[in-house]
Image (cartoon, rainbow, N blue to C red; front, side, top):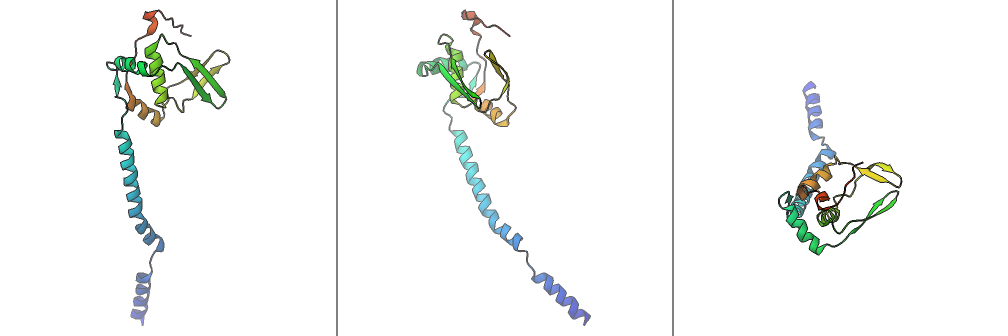
Length: 157
């Protein structure tokens, strides 16, 4: 009798199945396939480089050519508190072209202003956001020479 009871309990446990576990195993291959497609799409996007990766040696030549095509000198910054219109000097063509280039690359999207002084200035900082760091790495690392040697004055303050 005892043996029959133990055998019955054993068969009862063996016959029970976990429906949730079974469903998860069915869904896993689809999720993995979807992830592979998303990864492939992301890699394809990374391969599509419209502009070269810039460095301090290549930046000046790049912006000289960029300036010939992109003559924009007005920029509108849209914020939650209103718009800011900026007029860039045509005479500072490398810095103007750099700003236009970075704007078109959506580099400044999501920038936060840390300090605002009415009718005077705004201060935005270097973002620690991972997305911004990836944008920086994609664009390249470069410095442009100061325009003060060309007669333009920069007042620190």
